[in-house]
Length: 307
Image (tube, rainbow, N blue to C red; front, side, top):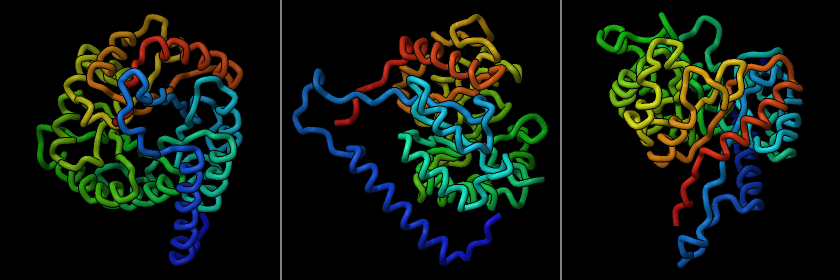
């Protein structure tokens, strides 16, 4: 890990944020829409489809950015913070990924693997793990952190002594996340109703659900997966995982994906859809993802940009 002094890091961080702003301005990102534009001519939010580096079998490999850029329809890659020999606790590595992201025009919408060794969401050191990950996310222009807690690591939402430490840690990390423009996306084994309860207890817009319908089926909430989209609503869903095991998204599986996409359309969700799919190798990943993208494009209706 690079133990760069905080003052040097701050200077570097400011420089990166300035370069990000210049890059976005050059690309026209963040421009105000034309006043008086009619609905017929108003811009539409672009379809935002990403893929996990783990799905590409390229965790810790900076070549994942260039490889993703070669997949038609993919505009982002979800990286792992603490996984891989070169990980995002090293600021030099963060800089390398930022340069590659800018070079190939690939966004890094989200970061997973935020926990340091031995840390979980209820741990005393959980806030520090999230804070360090938020720094990496801000430098990379990421809008979300995947905050994972499954099975025994997930709180019992019927017992205050179980969910209390989780709520407190998320509340403590929420402000630095919001200041960095980052959402803490909770991905876990809880039901949609319990996720709603947890998010509402935290009570901060920077804490939302990283909604994974396939996980709902895996952990016994399959019947609630699609209805859970409406239950949570646009205000509680920060980002979405899409997967169907090692099958194409269009093939039969535990989730009715056309119905799920229809539910996302209904609530006006306009965020990222990130594949967490399984493939035998990189070549298969590229071929499968190309087909999956065509399927998603048929079913996802992005709303008009705000005027």
